[in-house]
Length: 371
Image (cartoon, rainbow, N blue to C red):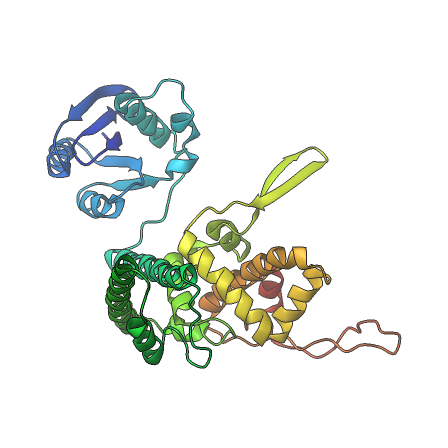
């Protein structure tokens, strides 16, 4: 007999609900122990029949998944943001949540998330560490600029402030108070430490990127650098899990919120769901791509229509386009080949070209329309 088990797990306590093959509740148990005790209890239960287990994705969900798949028939990791039956409930506790997860699992109605392997999870974590370290470095640089502005000190115009000469000048200037001098020295020391950490993390990421040919492939797109390419591959993991290129926009959170009923269709700001770091890198890459790729530049200019207030809207659309192109490139293995501009007739209208040009993603015309 197959058992359906819903877990509500925390680091120091866990609750699990057991349903039989007919969906009847056999018991709800709470263990005030860490995960090894829970895994041991489930292993004992697996001796009575195969287990189908489900729980919400949270911190450490991958580690728990790796342990459960060793002896469970099936393990489902649910998307916590889409479990409306739980997070919108009026009455909520661990026992109720575990039973609801078990019930949804039995009904096969759980919204699942993709669980990457250990290496991909470690790659994602290192990408996030670098992004946070770079943000800390930016805060420190802004602090040093604030010290200079507070005492109306202008940095030399001919040298960059963050070059070796600029830092030597910054360390040598005389500030009006000892407190300002101490703050400047502490910020300089912190900046040196963060620069060292960024270099160390970057070297490790470069080593990992060399093991993935897709990183080099995606960099054939103008404006896409190694950091954006590696983040895209790490978070997408398996490009075949996306049925078509349109799905990647929703995954990254670059599609607008939608409220549609009958003939009314309201579109709002982008959803901002999914990995925020990848979304940020795609938008930053889009700003570079519109300057270096004529086809994306034309798309940007078409959306802006000469209005400065539409520049951010346009660059988000370009980032969405880049995500689609990158996904199709990973699926097909083709390098980036931008479409040639269509010729204009004497009347100034675009003529249909009879030549077969490769789409921007190097795939078939059908896949180009999907992108």
